Amino acid sequence: MITILLDDTGISPRVQTALAQADALVDRGHEVRIVTTADAPVSWRSSRARWEFVDKLRPAGEGIVLDTAFPWNRFVTVDDGMFRARLPRESEPLRVLLSGPSQSEVCGIHDGYGAVAHARWFHQKLDLIRASPWAPGRDEPLDSVQEFHVSLSTPETTRLMHSCDVLIAPSHRSEEFGLAAAEGLAAGVAAAMTSIPVYRAFDAKDDFALFAPEDNAVELGEKLIELLSDAGLRQRLRTRGREVAERWRAPRVAEHLEKFLYDRPASAV
Image (cartoon, rainbow, N blue to C red; front, side):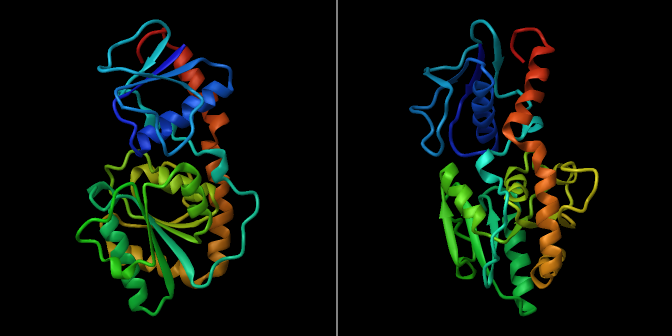
């Protein structure tokens, strides 16, 4: 029995990763239960684990218990539906995705807005697509946004990602997961990212995206201009990004997770 303790079931990289791993472990024959203080199962994705609702999280029973201290960021997982074997024709103008809540400083969303403004100043045409688990922040420049999507389910997130051509990932170095960027690579979306440890750790080579310094909207905007103006570069990054993303497929990550868990005593991890 593998028990996952969740004090929250809102959309977040930690919860997304935990649920993806729960399903992958179920697929490999494990009995997995999710114990949570939430009122109901998540509504934004399906889950094949067994749910238990409690008033208070307590160290539980036999088997392996994964709590909030478990290093889920070591096992970032991208659902298989996000991967595409074939890439569609690009949109015109190109659709540029900026994902994450502006209210979270770690996401660097305002740097993303600044990068888009910089590119547009230099006459680049694009549609800016925003996605966030929360409603827009009061200080977001919504007049620069062509679409704003809030609290998307997992299938809706997949459809949106597949509709986009370029991803801006402006997170700051305290970012632990990089899940949206990993999903973009899996979907074959050309990406401009900040040069932070979690993104650099995606692969030993830095040829899967364009990188700009953290907290620098102008430099990120320059990388965005490179992507928008060079179709050949976008195609190379789309292909290379999908190669890098293969390591995050749920079955593959579940194998690594099994080794991590069962090399330890059957107790809280």
